[in-house]
Length: 97
Image (cartoon, rainbow, N blue to C red; front, side, top):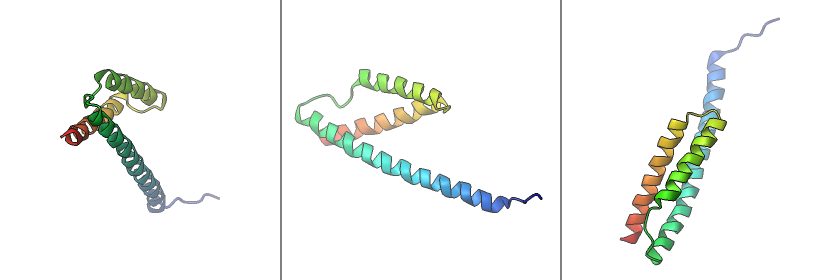
């Protein structure tokens, strides 16, 4: 006895799961940016530069390695991280004035 899978129902389940992941990503990014705002405020208070190229390079490499282990395209991981870091630096510059 073979049961037919309704592709629309299966698609709806997949999409619901994707929607959950998207929501989690947004919440995680929001929390990350709350922390980087605190970093920006600390840097501004002590007149530290808004960016740290050595740390940024190390983070990108670390995330590329994590991506490879997770079977995610490391180029995508680097592009994503670079975008986030640029946004964080922009926020730090705004905080600094």
